[in-house]
Image (tube, rainbow, N blue to C red; front, side, top):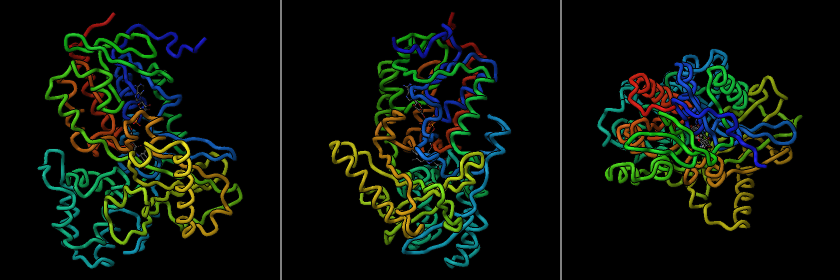
Length: 478
Ligand SMILES: Cc1cc2nc3c(=O)[nH]c(=O)nc-3n(C[C@H](O)[C@H](O)[C@H](O)COP(=O)(O)OP(=O)(O)OC[C@H]3O[C@@H](n4cnc5c(N)ncnc54)[C@H](O)[C@@H]3O)c2cc1C
């Protein structure tokens, strides 16, 4: 008989959260702490969504999306999760760039970037200050016509080298391009520049374990391997969900699933105005990724001078389309030293990430797909050999993930790694004005993506749901 993953589920909840990405878990935790009855449904066999990890023979644990986030994570985790989680967030000290235009190492914060821009790139102090102040002053309500490229042109015209320094890490961090609205850059870049790049000591597995413990403590009913097939709406109000074939009453649904999938498939277009459906259909998904996971033999080490994060490129100039090309010229290497998991077995690992297009992988036959993955591994090892000489001899394990892998595990259409382009944010925010009791929290609009963006968006939506439930303006269940 198949396992019943909904065994013992209550017949009614105040809130059902669909998906356990960082935004979904944060919404669930905050609302349960406020005393609401919360059900968290995740189709996968573990919590975390893209914030995930996997284990391989030899004691190796690979982190998929733990490459770096801004210092704001400390405050958000302390307030909305636990002190233990916040206290495990530590700074990455060595961020390296290596490309035909320049090679340098930086702490990746405003002070160090000011030094580099004035001393190495020859820009005046006043120009650098003006640039940082303008980036930091941007907010959601600004004119959104200005593009990232135009913004750079105002301060550093004709300086492709500076654009590369400023843009390459952010493109990796959230898929933004020179053609996206400048605020998507300004907000994310300024978050990093305030104090640098941070990571979670203990690895993603420890983080999610601590979050799971806190969810249970807060009283969230957490269910894994439960696929939500439908969100039910009657007379403009949410009434329940069908999950693993079972109907569950709920006053509010917060979907952490992809915004387009939520509207067009889980709820169904008939429940929205035709203008809203049009807006939804126009949302462009963000790009996907490829990754190569490499573990060294247990007795092999990497010199820490190699860096924590290395933006490596052989392309003569920075170009968005080159960053997405299957013909890879740019890679971000994340180096995980034994200190990443002080509690675990001492292991050295490297994860190489690139932005990628789903189309380049989608239609390949099984054979061609395997060959393309193998080629990705081989070319990545070739590139890594420049920084870790003799890597092939030191290697214990290597494997690759593609846009197809990300789509398979997270259900994000086209394997989108960072949600949607900017227009997804307005649709996500507009959901509750279309259907009473329906919300979305998760990577959208570039700004609300990444670990910090997802957690903070979860907090914003939890506050809105709390206010709605307290006003009792939702379908009463039971
Ligand atoms: C390769 C890669 C590297 C990254 N690196 C970084 C980084 O270094 N720093 C950083 O800050 N960010 C990084 N990110 C981005 C970051 O991981 C994500 O933006 C963030 O984790 C997304 O959280 P989310 O809440 O939007 O939900 P997601 O993680 O997208 O989770 C959504 C969840 O919903 C579940 N779900 C979907 N549909 C259903 C359904 N019908 N029923 C039940 N469950 C469902 C999915 O299984 C999934 O668990 C990276 C992403 C990728 C792919």
